[in-house]
Length: 189
Image (tube, rainbow, N blue to C red; front, side):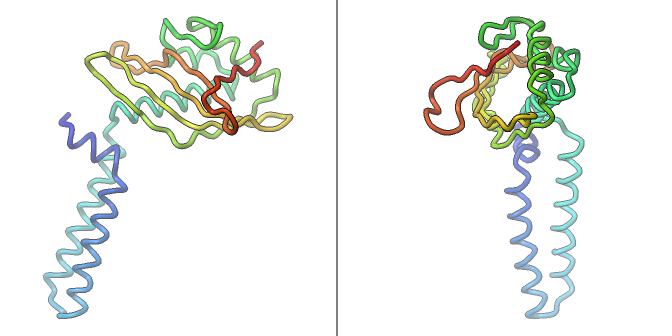
């Protein structure tokens, strides 16, 4: 796939805003002079927006796959499904003292113990992505809902490309407020 399509699919809001501004200009021209060709131009702009929207639904970019895989890992922890998590963890996965795909069992046990029942990931950003190195660096903010309250944190991680799938290799948590550079290790069972 050519890089321009990746950019369009990864950043559709920028294009939608630009198309919206162009549509407003043509609507204003139509309002001003009543020419039907300006309405045709509005229809073309709307059609381009619809085509872009369809493209975002059908094309999975690397950034999209990384985001989706991170969501699947989090969902696996919430649903206590270590098998689901393992599908998206690298064989060389590391989190604190945990190593390998069996780490998923420890995360699920911890989620069960603390009654984890929900999560929200936001401000997700792929900071670096290199096909040559087969590696991507990510950052996101995280809220974990549990029976006794919420955990808020920021996370940095590394995904590696294994075959044609991006898998999580490392993840590190940081406090959401206070010393955001100080790594935080939540208790694991």
